[in-house]
Length: 176
Image (cartoon, rainbow, N blue to C red; front, side, top):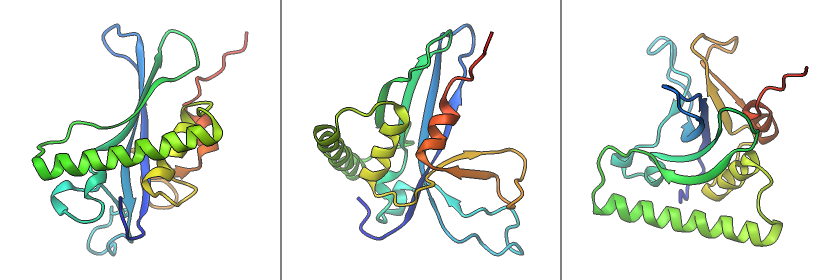
């Protein structure tokens, strides 16, 4: 776990099934926020960075860490199979693998303590909030989405809290 204080957040997306699949997927990957480069050097820099394993810094264990879930694309509102895992790391040596296992054990232990104290999370958004707490995310608006077009604030990202995450990943209601 990082010992220095970093602004750790997540970028999430949902994906509809393709080619006749029946499962919708959710993925939130860890990022961190820094002061962007001056616009004269990089006008499109929003200050969003991916932790890198090769950096060997305090955020290296968070490289490729994701929260995943799925739900039936043909109905049903509930996400299931919530997981914290590493998603497709490019290459892993023994040091990387040991860092990954150490972080996953710490996160799993913290989640188990929270389950003992509060019970199982009521939904995916609550689970996401607990994972964010377990890895040291401190910003209340830790849940972001990427937008292709620039937003009014000059970035491509919109960040929100767990309650809005819950709203954003809910299946749209169709009233008859």
